[in-house]
Image (cartoon, rainbow, N blue to C red; front, side, top):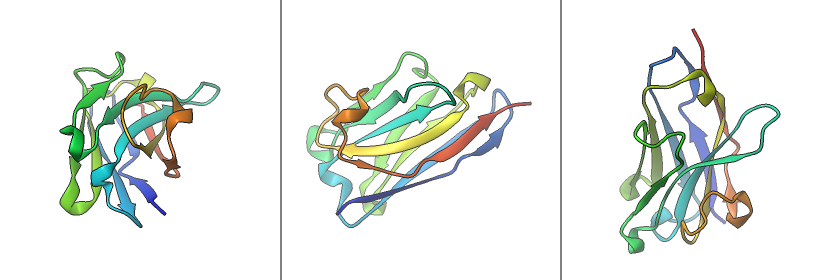
Length: 126
């Protein structure tokens, strides 16, 4: 059973950076696509990014609201996926979740994912 644990959230000023980690246990991440989602209070869960499995060349996908500011990557040796977030804005404030599925096709739909982490809070405020 794959288990995911997010870390790296916190409080940061506008324009700052954070790197989130999604560490896996119970199975290797090599065969999974990993998506990052976020959910702000009173809003629906939003797909932020996805990285395909190693077998699919680790292709990456980004939502329009984060394109050019966020970078997703994976380190299979550490069984971990990262989300580097730069130029953070107050509207990026949310709980961030990572999730696993077999491919990134339709990555922005939460219902397509089989495994979820518990989330990590990101707050962007001065």
